[in-house]
Amino acid sequence: MQRLWPPEQRSPDEIPAADLEAFYAYPADRPWLRVNFVSSLDGAVTVRGSSRGLSAPADRRVMALIRSLSDVVLVGAGTALVEGYRGVKRTEVRSELRSRLGMPEVPPIAVVSRRCSLEPDSLLLTDTVVPPIVVTCGSAPESRRAALADAGADVLVAGDETVDLPAAVTALHERGLRRIGGEGGPTLFGDLIADDLVDELCLTMSPLLTSGDAGRIAHGAPIAAREMRLKSVLHAESLLLLRYGRLRG
Image (cartoon, rainbow, N blue to C red):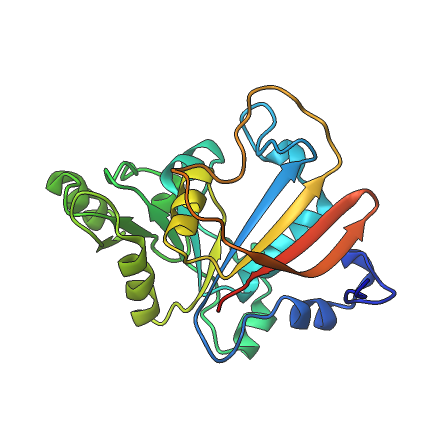
C-alpha cells in the first residue's frame, strides 16, 4: 500500500502551519477548482438541514485554510441561504498568508443563482469586506440584476437560460480569480462534475451515522463517472480528511 503524506503526523492539529499550508497549496502553474465538503459515514450532507452538525474543529481549520488560499469562494444560492453565508471576515482567513502570497486581504464570495435570487439586504451584501459576485444568466429578471448591482454586487452573466458554468469559471479566471474554492451545495457540485470542472475534492468524513432523508454531496443528472485519485488522508481522532485529485488523460 502507498504511504500517504504526512508519514507520521496525521492530524491537522499536529502539523505545523507552514507544512499544512504547503500541503493544501493550489498549483502555481494553472487555474484550479477545489471543492470542499463534509459528509456523514452513511453519505448525508446535512444534519437537521445544515452541515454544521457534521463539522468539527479540525475540519473547520482546514476549511479556513482553504479559504485563505483561495482567490474566490464559490457557492450555490440555496446553500448560502440555508447556511447563513455572509462575507468572509478578516478573522476567518490568515492575513499574513494572503499578504505573503500577494492576495487581497479576503476573498470574495461568488454566489451562483440562475434567478438572481439573492436579496439586496442579504448579509452577503450588507456584512462583508468585499462585494460578492453574483453569477447568473441572461434569463434572470433584469430588475433583480439591477437591484443587486445597485446594492454593490458584481453581477456576472454567464449563459442564456441557465448558468453556463464553464463560461462563468473562465470569467472568474479573467478577473484574476484562478484559485477557486467551492463549498457546495450538492446541485452546484453536481453541475460542476457534469461540466468536468472539478480538479480536486476535499472530503471530510464525519464519524456519524444519521440515516434520514438528507441528500448526498452531489446531485444532478447521471453522467459518465469521473475517475479520481486519492492524494492524501489526514485524521483527527475519528474524523477523516480525504483529498482526491481528478485523473485526466
